[in-house]
Image 1 (cartoon, rainbow, N blue to C red):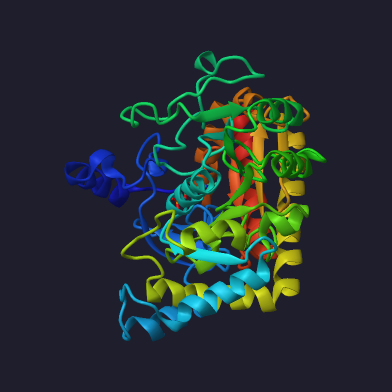
Image 2: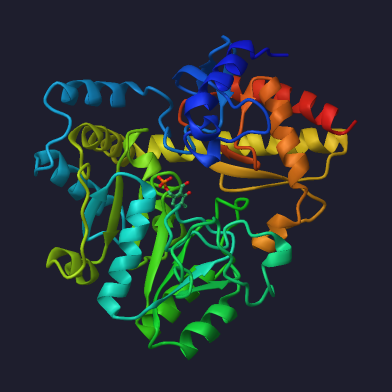
Length: 434
Ligand SMILES: Cc1ncc(COP(=O)(O)O)c(C=O)c1O
């Protein structure tokens, strides 16, 4: 078992000057959070010298592993040429051209720094283009931490209202009064609910936004026909269909979820995996809609947008993902699926009721008796305390997963990592079942 003496000391020190001792709420932990010394490939080392197999990967970005040579070289080459121009440069159109070639629905792009900004831009553009006010989002979907969308992500069930017509539950104190008034929360995977609402309010609904593969409340696939149905309803009513591909982009396939599921949205937000851990996000969409940004009707700005060091990383990463897609995506999913199979087998051996879902490149381990989880309410009814406990038992055994049961894979996870992980999983389930 691992010791974390230095981490405990650092956490105590950090709390004196950093609110809560962490720089993002997602990094809060039940006890001392992980303090990283350095990371390489699929592994990281904490400040106490423990080596850890990493399935968090910076919450997704490190698809090519930590400190990927292709990223390190691109960043090093650019860093001495200037890091912040706030002016045009060649890497911008190199990345834009590549992204538009890879992603089915991308005809024009604008860059930002983080995912929340790209989503924010998408929602403003949808409202600005259509002149309508309302946005439909789904319960359990996370679209960043800005006031326009931080509603009904993980609402307590006793405050969440009727399953068929969920309440719009704020995710924080202090949101702009009324920010959620134009947000309509509907249950994921219920096409009829969407069709009924959007058709009845066709002159009001600017957009329907979703995580095309829900990754923030379990890993929940769209039911057959759901995304195509959203596409149809949006086309019929003139609402824009927005895919939040901050997690799925460049992870499910070179062309993101829109390639993976074969449904093309009007706008999409990308981030995380597109720059190998550097900070770039993008709003990408059809030229007809992006024209409202191009001609200045809809404002879009940012000092650090298309910052050249991050763009150098994005150019290098997207080139690899595009040109080596056949060597990257099938093994990435296959490695994940072999882990998923091993986790199911270990759970069965120890009598732990477990459901494992996802395409492979990322997946979710639920502790539940339920044979399927298709929406937020079903996710919220799984044994989340046991999932948190499993995360802690695994971390004690040198395996780092997202506490809510999510696992991210990288191209650097090998068969040896899988074997090592499954040994730890076996031991963790043995303890969990006691
Ligand atoms: C689906 C989705 N959208 C948006 C965001 C926000 O991205 P960022 O944290 O880079 O602002 C996240 C972050 O995890 C996400 O998972």
